[in-house]
Length: 312
Image 1 (cartoon, rainbow, N blue to C red):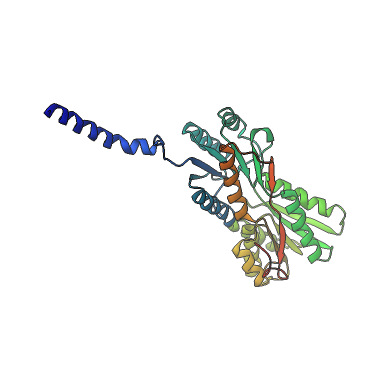
Image 2 (cartoon, rainbow, N blue to C red):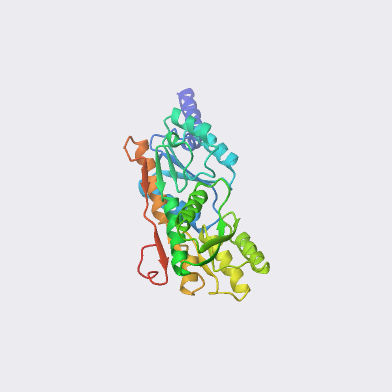
């Protein structure tokens, strides 16, 4: 009897020792499914709002969500996804760093039947993901530039602050700008530089333009962080309101700047809706549900005339 009791005690100790391992590796039957949100970066209002909304939706669905930051490095993002697939992830929501560079790892996800939802930005290979959730960046660019053209009376010089090279959203928004301007010969793009979505870099670029005497009636920035950088540079130069500023994302800072008449307009992409919807669809796909190839979120221009009434 003593031998049996001793053996039972040893078995109980072993079970208690390996229980944390079973829990951490997902071997317990009641473990929640584990999903991942792979972001290109987490350095501004837009990306952090999107990630927060995805986390909130994951909590509502009772699943675990891992959020990873690729720091604008496609190789890092590729490695992160490779690791997640090796860990047995249930589904992937990806905001790609660039249009190319993930083909091999997404092919592996497809082979392993791991659902892939792209959010905000697309890649060049639509066959490698199950659904896209976001806005039409070309349309967003059209809306932003059309607002600028109207504000300057269809005549004047425009400077453009662009996003990172390789970004699908940046490229498509710029194409939207050109589409609006093709029939407006009196509106000219006189300067453009990549500010990498960053406020400080945009501020430096605009300050240099001003020091160089660059003629500008408006600055069109491809996100609100860069627009705020332009606003700061103009304020420092005593040119607030003289040169109009336009942004994208409807961030809190941009909305405050519109209230202060430091910015003319921004374009809302309903960022939180994008994040929650992308996670929800990834969850549904992993459970065998069917969805359209793309789900587009409406965009709307926000200015001082509608800022207090429109859905952000």
